[in-house]
Length: 192
Image (cartoon, rainbow, N blue to C red; front, top):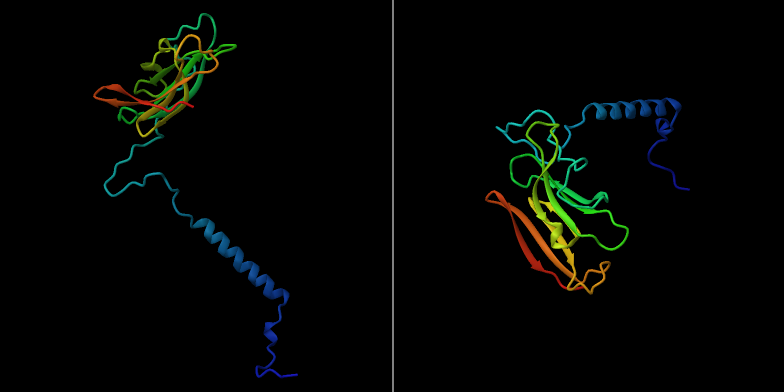
């Protein structure tokens, strides 16, 4: 057996006092870390000279209780999709909703409406633009509101002989607020 050149070090053996000292030191480190938390991160940090408004950001209008220009003949109006964003650049978000009549079968046509509210927080939401009129007899597939752009896949029928459950035409549509109105751009989408 080979002997160690280093003498036996008695202080390398752990004793309860060592464990107690280690636990106390760790508790102190954890407590200090809890007290020294950084500021909460935000999506955009304020730079030098930036003035930020006090209070929460305005909420997008809620479609509940809005009277949509949709004739359902006694059936309920059904909001099937919604999105929000600042579409006109005024610093307040608008809501864009897809609404149709509740039907037992088939695919009823959809309307796409833009909602806003007055500058006063708590004012009622109201329809300010119709992007898709139900009279066009189209329904909405995919739908998104992003970066000031409203996009949707519109589904339709090539003839009256096509069953109302199974649209056979599809178009990609984009709407953007330009010069005080919503401009619509149609793109042909491939058939499924």
